[in-house]
Length: 291
Image 1: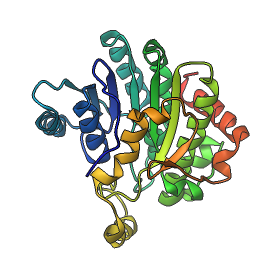
Image 2: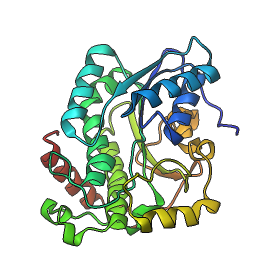
Image 3: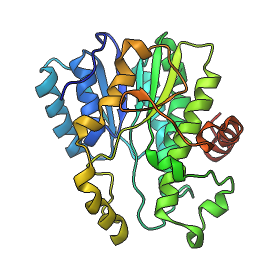
Image 4: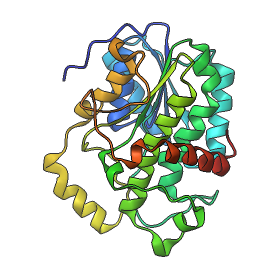
């Protein structure tokens, strides 16, 4: 699988959440092959060691690969991660918000958030905002957030109690809502960073055959997933747009856009509503305590 041409990333630092498997691992590998120092964020230390070995096999033994073991579904964990990174790094050139889940049964985190909302949206919102000083220190930095075509089915529910109500819960709408939130977050972030050297873009990676389905996912989810497998792309194909947005010179100054297949793509009407983007930002700030 050929990846798009990119400038050398020697001397640059990249952080990839969900970087120990699937398209996150491929993205991290490609950034390391271009010379970046790569920080992987994941929940499983054993898988991280396997990822590190795979990356160094591809990029060479001198490749600098680090790992942070963190469950991003909890905002407090995101805060702790950001504090550690702020102590250890002088700048961050690339942030790839790749980690995400396909929800199973209705689940609330220990902080009282629906699990997919917390993992897929609140975590990127919190981590990106907390790392803005490091991104700004890079001079020209890129934030890349993995969304999904499923956002077309999404709608932002402003009432947390409604989102957390198991009687109103659907795994499909919960996932679609979080993916819509990824796009609205990206557009509002790009607007707020307009006069800085930081760009923010998001993408649909394609229907990728990865470990997105959780062990506790419902039989319906698992059946739909298996039925769709013949139409899926592999992780190498799925990571191409993430790598493109993180490295390609022609998008160095592009911001606030939604991509698919390494090209700007059409998103839903809701995903283009800047009033909703601003409202989502306020909701996210209230729910995380992070402006």
